[in-house]
Image (cartoon, rainbow, N blue to C red; front, side):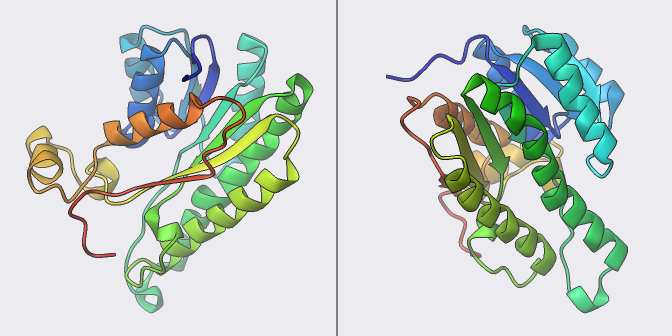
Length: 244
């Protein structure tokens, strides 16, 4: 039987749009208490006002370690615990490595890898103290396949996968689950999809892309498994994605 997520305290990074926003909306429906984190205060406040859930708005830049620490500290102060860390924030920079802007590429590593490590590191002590918790990292199919047109993005997601697999083993027996959700192509703003008609065309029509809501449903499935079950990696692909 699925376990209830009601009253779970969940931190979501990258919550202002795309998959993170879908996470927030879906988990609010499950009765979770939420910390919404991203750089855009206006977008976070607008989202929080729409949710029927107790929500803490925590503006945070994932390249600033102090912001990550403050996000977790404010959550503990407000709710008293962290049940779930959704380390979701990420950016995408494709293209030929030799022609790329090295500052943008290394910034992507700071957000896609360094911030994930820092988010997990910040919540593990309180989770150990309570003997339970979930850390879910938004990864990618690019963490399982070497994608030549996005070499540094792919490298960042391979790093995330190694982190999930090894830290899960370090924390075995602690009550903490460490998991990755790895989607294929998703029709959302990160990938240039902003109009509902375009999203419908490639998701329900051509079936070449997932939606952010598909990812949110997968997250709920992972979190609601009995505590004896860890979904270490959940890879979800559009039915008709053929470029990987």
